[in-house]
Image 1: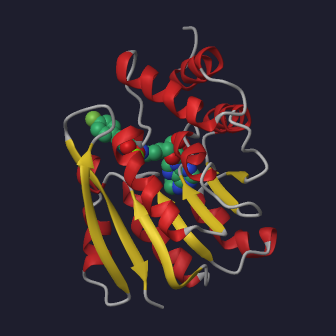
Image 2 (image 1 turned 60 degrees about the vertical axis):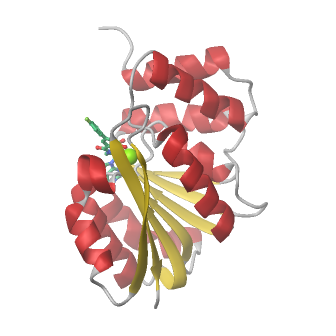
Image 3 (image 1 turned 90 degrees about the horizontal axis):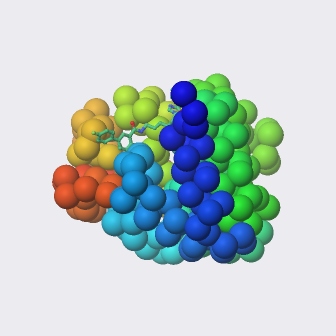
Length: 214
Ligand SMILES: CCCNc1ncnc2c1ncn2[C@@H]1O[C@H](/C=C/CNC(=O)c2cc(-c3ccc(F)cc3)cc(O)c2O)[C@@H](O)[C@H]1O
Ligand SMILES: [Mg+2]
């Protein structure tokens, strides 16, 4: 009946943001999702932690698992140096259609490659398709029970190098217990928890930053 939530988010961007201005796109989504209807964007509180990690890594090659509407795609891509690429993976075609429009509205389409399909199928194709040797930065924000299998897949495909940084959303809420277990008890990762709160709420959540040691 009527518009989907992603469509309503896109409308809020088109109505309240300035074309080509990523900051205004981020602000429009945050305002809509805080005051009109909640949505599972990483949000403004955790977004500040995401920004600081992206700025610290200053990645030439970045990967995002779980585009949804493209909110964190815009947050990451707006900080990338010229010539860098963010690959974002989304298997819901309706979300992909909306995300492409929000990324383009922000003027970031030249930095972002949206791959449509399940991460498990697409990750093994990234090297040959994009000529990427490894990722400097990976943002995990898709189904929480897929964080571990996809991290293992990235390792197996040789897409992580000494110093690659993984940043995982929602390790407290909804929670990714197997992932925390994996990175915290694995000598190949140096891991640290950044406490924050679930997007647009006072509920505890946070991001886990894990450096691959090779
Ligand atoms: C084959 C499945 C794994 N591979 C995948 N490959 C590509 N895209 C995938 C994907 N899994 C999921 N996706 C996509 O990522 C998105 C899913 C994200 C899942 N995120 C959450 O469930 C989530 C949920 C909450 C949440 C928190 C509290 C609450 F009460 C209700 C929800 C908060 C968050 O920040 C979240 O990220 C969708 O767009 C989906 O189509
Ligand atoms: Mg999330």
